[in-house]
Amino acid sequence: MQLKSLDQWLEYIDLVRSTEIDLNLDRIRFIYKKIVKFSSATKVIVVGGTNGKGSTVEFLTQLLIFSKRKVGTFTSPHLFKFNERIKVNGIPISDKMIIDAFELIEKSRGDTRLTFFDFSTLAALTIFSNLNLDVVILEIGLGGRLDPVNIVDSDISVLTNVELDHQEWLGKNREAIGKEKAAIFRDQKTVILGQHDIPKSVIEETLRLKNKVFRIGRDFEYTVNDSLEEWSFSWKNGNQINLDKLQLGSLSVSSLSCGLSAFFALGNKLDADINEVIERTYLKGRCEIINNRFLIDVSHNASSAEYLAAFVKRNFSSDVEITAVLGVMKDKDVNSIIKPFKKRISKWILTSADQKRAMRAEELRIHLELQCDLNNEAKIFEVEKVNEACILAHQETSVGSLILIFGSFYTVAEAFLTINILKSVA
Image (cartoon, rainbow, N blue to C red; front, top):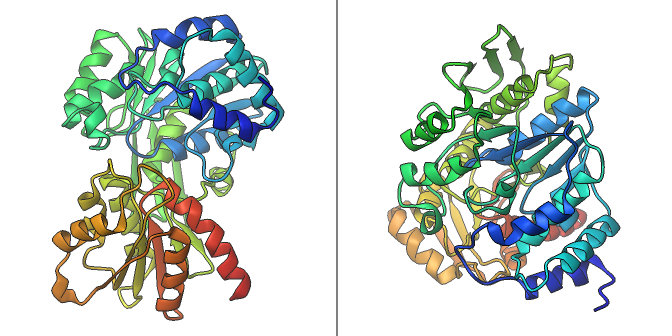
């Protein structure tokens, strides 16, 4: 088998992937032990939770880079290129490094069938183990217990929050989901809990494992004003940080606080200018405003949609008309995504990303009509493709109004391509 390009490899690992659902991690454990050898000096941090994982990882990464640490990060999904998932000091690694890792995994797996995420995770871990890194930060993709990232024994586990999402896989309520997510904790190791009302199932797991727990409201805390321009953070040993005139953008103070807590839990002292670190903490496709006309966000569950709605309320007056381009996946709670916006949107353009999992526009319309008061005269359009939906939104939205594009990573990724074209001809 001669696979020369990264695109060929990605097509291959998607083709040969296991189609089983409830897979035990033992199937990849022997591969991991065979090809991944971390230095004892390398600290491993695993970040799980429903929302805020990506911004926690990115902020912590920037804090460590400012402290002259060499940091590897593994996140998912990507927006444009697979390489975005695997970075060293914030820079995506090369195609060649990924291909070399894939080749090694392929030789080592025998007849074991791996998922796309198994291949991806093992590749990242293989690459990181060969680079003599100071810190490796790994983002859980889905849940915790069965996520391939959970093959690693971490030094610190961060759980940002537990909300309702992926209920068909993780459980019907927050207690069940919390138990799945708490499976990333390790015996007697450090755990950071970033949610005040964390489920009891999570606390019970920390007690069972005798973890060293840093819990918000007890060991660290933050306060923030209504405009999110003033933020105060305190750490149990007396570290106090007060900031004003913040420009947080897509970053939540909760994620920043989790990142700072992990930074301190590693034994670091804060020498960096926090405002400068925040300025360098950038996540594309999260509350991203383009040309003061497009607002792009990958929010795809209830809590992230509520955060996006709050961002809109803070940054745009009620006089600004909003056209929404919405595209979601079939397995999402569409009603909870729509709910925060149902009285704010003037025009809805419903669309479907080029994915098998994408919900069709006509089905989206049913959910929207059930959620919204049709007497509010909001217009609804159904457009098959995301690029066509963005063009229609541009045509239907007057100068000075806002186009909001959200619902999934896939929708946002496709929208960016069209927005770049619209910018060039504006």
